Image (cartoon, rainbow, N blue to C red; front, side):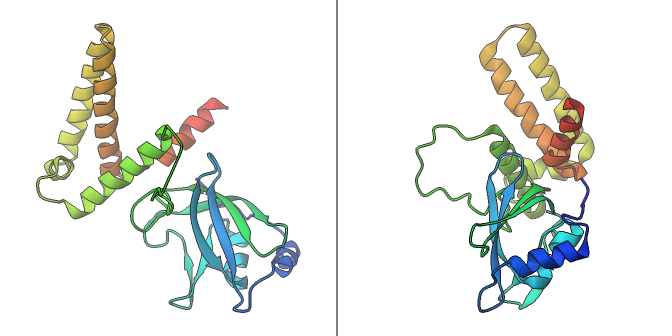
Length: 219
C-alpha cells in the first residue's frame, strides 16, 4: 500500500485549502470513510497545515485540540490511512476523506470509532467487519496476554505452534469437505480462519494487505 499525493500541483493545493471554510478556531471537521465499503471510520479535526500535509503526502494528518499539535494517523500505532479521494460538502465547511485503512482506525482497537451500535434494523453484519474486529481483538490479546485466554496461550507457545494449528485446522476443513458434512465444514472453516488471523497478527500482517493482493489478482 503506497501513499500518493492527492493533488500534485502546489497552486491547486493552495486553492483548495483557501476554498475550505474553517471555523473561528481555524478548524474543519474531517470525516474518514473506507474507500472499499463506505464504512465511516472516524471523525477528527484539521487545520490549514494538517490539510495541506494530507493532500501533499497522501496520508491523513489531523489537529489535536487537546494537545494543540498536528498528528499523523498511524505514526505510532502503524494503523495508517492512505487517502484515495477527498471531497468537500456543499457549504465547504466539512471534508470527506475516502481512505485505504491499514489496521484499525479506533484507538480502542476496533475497526471503526463508530462500532457501538445504539439501535439497528440490520439483520446481518458484514463478513469484512467481523474479520477486522476479530483481528483487532486478537491483536489486543497479543499485547495484554490475559490469563486464561486461549489466544494468549497460542502467542505464548510461539509462531511454530501457531503455524502448526493452522495446518491442523486446514486438514480438518478438507476432511469435512470430502465427507460432505456441511455443519462440520462451517465449524472447521471458522476455526481455520481464526487461527489464520492469529498467525497474521503474530507475523505482523494485516487483512488489508491480503485484500490488496486479492484485488491485484482480480484485475
